[in-house]
Image 1 (cartoon, rainbow, N blue to C red):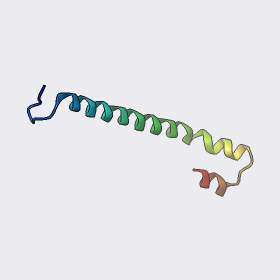
Image 2: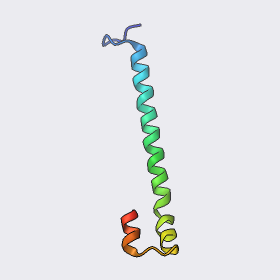
Image 3: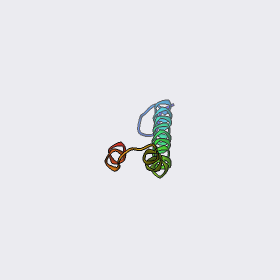
Image 4: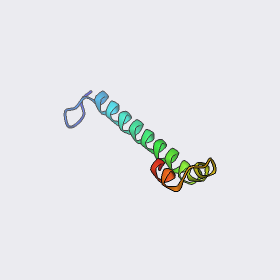
Length: 58
């Protein structure tokens, strides 16, 4: 089936699927990083790292 712009509809669906998959992966990465933003420095300080080392890790 042809799209109004002449593209194949299956290609459009594949492109949309790839877009949403990439969006979900990016969102999951951001949420994972954001979830560690608060507890990670506290944990690193608790195990004895200096402030500059905690900053280097972040």
